[in-house]
Length: 394
Picture 1 (tube, helix red, strand yellow):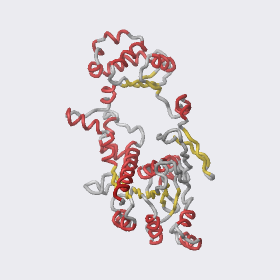
Picture 2 (cartoon, rainbow, N blue to C red):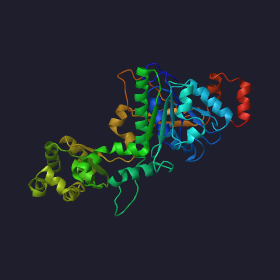
Picture 3 (cartoon, one colour):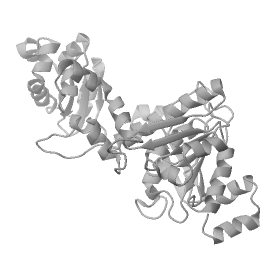
Picture 4 (cartoon, rainbow, N blue to C red):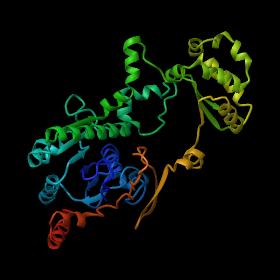
């Protein structure tokens, strides 16, 4: 599986994770060429496997490509021994158990770094290793809410949760970023280190610009603040399809929008005479533009906005994205095929290293698919493997 042309070729990562944060972090490393061994509980595996029937759900597939699956119960003595043997031969461990669980199992940082001083040990949790919320369970919505992220998108007058698992994804990205930093530190020192990531801190860092503004202005932004400041709009067209516009701050884009809409009344309206005025009267401008855009279908506005160099895009539904000409041209989807589970279509990794794009992702593994192969690589004899399977260790 190792591609020597990839930046993390030769790096072995053990992922003792479930759901999104740790699996996503490990998958990002896999996308850079690392070998990932996913440690899963026998019979059930990662709970995300069974989110939608069977043990190969779309949710699991989305975060687990290019990995090998090893089913092992690390709470049993035999499973723990197997795990520590893997630790001796690995570069990175990433886990997202609740704080203290790995230490209670005898697999904490101090214990494992004594076995392998070069090990990078990445722990991901909800609120940090200490503090009043340490033992609380945490999922994506919890991280979004506590960090203030949800206050930027949920209308308090009609509170509904929408969108995607932003806190989970951001936390996984920061974990991958932290692991890459630790690998560089190891080049300099020759020793591994502990990397700690929590969902609260990661999500707050992701929206740091709003905190900086709040501390300066003493005013907490509401759900429309970003759109007002950035002068962005989502507008319905005559065919009920949506289009998005983002004018930002350059005056030329306001002038371009005036030309594209052929609405001279906007240019002479004192409410819209400057960027500051347009921010102050954002809702009025939104209503004026809504009345203009609803007169023609989206295809008409795409042509007009493009011709006048307005920053825009159609608001696609997910089924429309694959048919977009730019998406097709760039080949942003890739089909993976598993010999048992069949096809999975994924989004290509967003990182490219010049013209030599040799990286090929592989299909997400079935539960325990690589158990016997990995144990064989570790030196276990067939009889030992059979015994561990009989004892429920693997």
